[in-house]
Length: 76
Image 1 (cartoon, helix red, strand yellow):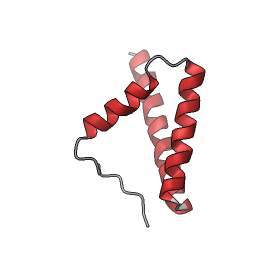
Image 2 (cartoon, rainbow, N blue to C red):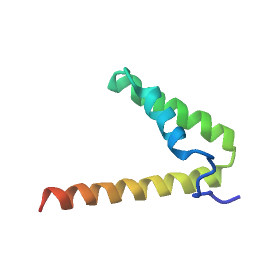
Image 3 (spheres, helix red, strand yellow):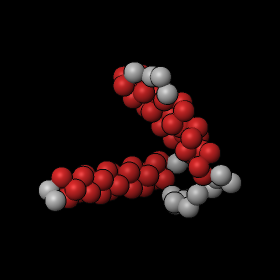
């Protein structure tokens, strides 16, 4: 199995809102704990270490891209 990067949601915006709303009113610490629990629950649901490895690599690459965008903006 390979990582699917296309949206599988009928309404991706609604899915995004669900995640954002789940964090509303939480402290930074509780928000981080929620993210950790959610990642572990969904990773278990996927149940494929190779897909998880691919997802981690993609997320790390996207973090690097976000850092570059912020640095570029700050330096202009």
